[in-house]
Length: 265
Length: 241
Image (cartoon, rainbow over all chains, first blue to last red):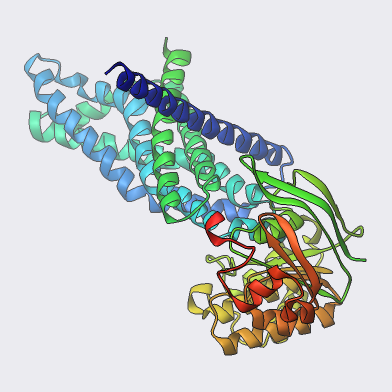
């Protein structure tokens, strides 16, 4: 019995160590890829055509899902909030609270989730598939750095185009919240629009745009890096995609906390 | 001398994949590298081409050498059509950016496609091509920069005998046209007979046979004999892999 417990403990230690090792390797890969990306950014030689092509995937392909998620979330919040506030005689604050929650947090985080599921997973699987089919190796032999060709344009596209998604989604979310408030609590649209600005400062908008840029660049970097590190076959493509999605979710949560701490604490 | 390998060693997780490998390939010659799967043949090519780092040893090539490599499964960029695949290094490589006009690139791509007998497929995507055609497009892409060292990783694997013969002819033709030093990793005896000048055989990371194609086919040592006769009895134990 004692022997069996000891064996199980050893196994648990080994498994934990393997998990820690895997974590550190992934972190190291992302860090290394980021430093290589920075190296290219500092040369200011940007492949505009590729950036626009990748930007289309951010801003255009993921727009429907982003609008759906942000629109639904804001509608649900308004559905819960507006009747209660109206009962307390504070219905005019619905717009203020909606704008506060949407602009500061929900729109950017929710559109980040949409981007992870739509664009991040696609980046990771695409690059992982290139890696396991030796396309990345071929690129290296042909004298083209895959970091410059594949990762840098996606990183820049994430940084530039994620705010576009955020702004459109946030506006759509506020419209949805307004319509739902009017429908569920009979609040006037005009009052809703007027009160929107009571909870919102220009500073909040700039912070949210900056945050969305950081989210976009982080999602692109993590997704590309996880795909780039994939070796083996079809199974590894799946694992790389899963890893990219999980790491991107965690990274977004951490960035959100950092932004909240720095700007609102 | 175009390519000299001296005492090349490579290990993966303490397992020695290549152990003190040395050989030379001159311009206009083709070296065949044979051996069991997992004997380190592809690793050798990946080290020469710069995809993998060596642990120790030397790879001596003349200054300004251009190394090209073709891959077992072609490794064509599936998001680009045939034209863009072949033009890729001319357009994207730092040294070549802006060096060629679009007309010049178009002319080079057409020439290379003609060289591998595939004119008129510029607009097709890799998924629309057969395995043999993909290999030939891979060849065209590899030689677009006029390499003086060409590495072929299993060029005829998975192809029918007729297409294999075609590919072998192209290997000989490209060697002559470019006067390149070529290294061909293969399992196929037909490729060795038709496209290779001399052969090394790898087993457990060591060179166990070095000689001409005729010496290999004559089975001048027990390793060559076992390989040529495709026998499971001999010094190379498959189970020990």
